[in-house]
Length: 73
View 1: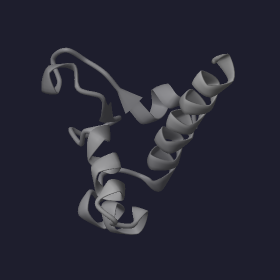
View 2 (view 1 turned 90 degrees about the vertical axis):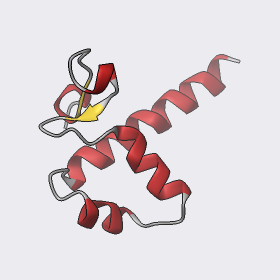
View 3 (view 1 turned 180 degrees about the vertical axis):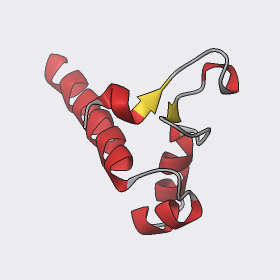
């Protein structure tokens, strides 16, 4: 899945907060759940409008961004 198919940013949707495409679920919620010790499956149960593929794409993008930043230092 392409990142633009998973995450949408629009100033008219939650003030430009990144959300999962087709929802009003902020991407930050995924990171908050994981940081709080919840599983990906629990996040998906709580937000059934978000697909597993969307969450994996978001996590892959975060990983890639972090690793790219580490390589450029």
